[in-house]
Image 1: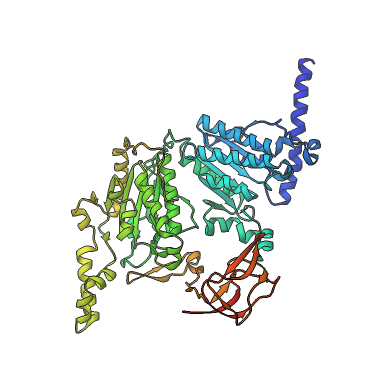
Image 2: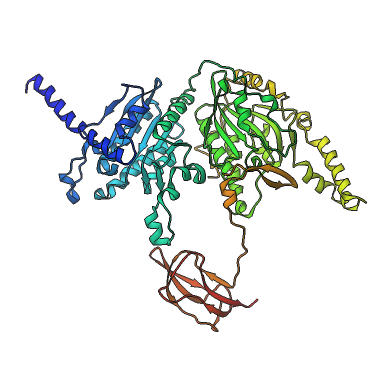
Length: 513
Length: 106
């Protein structure tokens, strides 16, 4: 074969695989979805996608598979850039055998995963698949297993992002579940272990796919998803934003951005209400201290009694964990503990300083909470904060009562800097409850118990519901005004930028999973 | 999640705050009634070994509830008398359906 004909032959082969993309686009469009290629190109910077393994073919022979040619074996893999940041990416192609996962398909994915690990790059996986390729039997299961194994090995080494843009059911759900951030899109994402059909036959319960495992459910009820979008385009914008906040791998820090002051309309001075039982939105405080008042909230809809996400301060990424008095008075419970603990561990793994904003009355009482294991779930927060060796900064805004005070990155769990506003109340419990216990006898035996109760509550408030007992003990470093907060945190980050603390040598700890 | 402010009482303080969907949907705790034998899983009743009036000892087999391709034998949790049987053989039952009512000896 001449040189020219070899080149021609190559283009013929390449075109043969690529020509199915036109039909794929139509098929996906009918289902209200973009094609795998459209998705990759929408996420990556124009012209930066380099595809690998275009010619990979399956080796399956049973059930007529020997006569079936599946372009790319149903998955795109490759590398590219997002706003200049290099990433590895794969996208399942639902138009090829329903995006089903056979061994060759899985091996393409594990190959790009190994590549991401070796090169120290974030991995983005776009899931749109009917599940296991049944014709391939146990080989298909092997494929899933090899992916899960790599997800776990890569955990804490490279950031892993899963984008659910279609069905992701059965065993397939466990790859996203093992990754750091799961993105879902309304009406498109469907995640469940067993679908509505099985549930109906086995349990007699009827439920739609959307109500069982749709995007909203995963974002609000189950907590499996971290980012929820109304459209694929919005989802891609969220991914791009996230990538700018996190480092390429655990040996690096997130790239700094040019520092920007918070927006002038975000006024930190008048967020707190006068009465300490009145709610406010803690995000107003986060935005008032963040560069350009920009806050990328993670798991916005699930366990909203705690707020987590990323901001920049003086150009550097900071992971924020904040109690949210607006929801459930900001209590810690089963879900909010899980949410905070996982985020803390992500930040610690990827060298992102932690800022904790404290305003909580304690843990949520209730039989359901106790029976769901609020003890072991709550313990995750203690574990995650104590284990974290990144710079830990804490600001007590208002209430810090009892176990909640300890859990929210107190000095006792290794916080490097603890500041408190003059409005802080650091005590074992709120004045009402405390007075009713301590002065029970005096209140009961008083001629006017209600007046006595009020007097004792007042007495307790003046004595303990402030930051000065904790300041006297040295548990907080400084009492600062709300207006000073940003400057103090930026200073702490500069002073603490060389922090190096190591946990005792061990294989790994045993967190209360 | 509803945006209305509700009242949450913690340590005698009343906080104005929103509730999560999960909190609003939570079921109030019901203490277990030892006289009631309920289906712990949805399935089909395969065999019933007792009828009303029968005396049963703790551990006696009451019925077989087939679910998830498994025949689950249901035993009497205590000694007593069978008060009422609510199901027949081959009847489909949902989770928590009342199957048998006992009159347990204290």
